[in-house]
Length: 124
Image 1 (cartoon, rainbow, N blue to C red):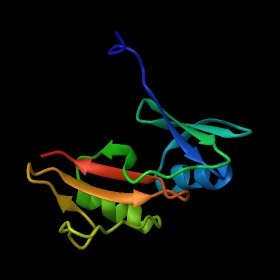
Image 2 (image 1 turned 90 degrees about the vertical axis):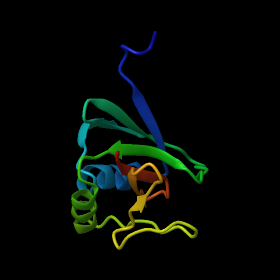
Image 3 (image 1 turned 180 degrees about the horizontal axis):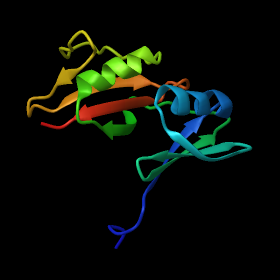
Image 4 (image 1 turned 135 degrees about the vertical axis):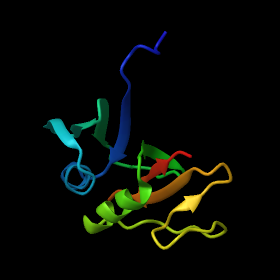
């Protein structure tokens, strides 16, 4: 039913300008529309909508993730733009912050300015 419909992802933020700058400048997403309390970005054909939330409640899991072809290169490029990769107790991560899952998938996590957890994954 919805398999042929475009998807829109929503991310709550407390400062729309700061979040827009991060998603546009650090992550390289194109701004499609911006206004009072929102910003719509193009994530390779999917819509990512930043929404102003007065009392944002953070969660301890990934809210948005991207599939990448070369995670090492993507980590390097993002780090050059100021993105800091997260480290987690209990999992072994390489120098870039990449964890290799038992099935061979490679994953790295980082935060947006509102501490929303974002990730990049290179599937095995």
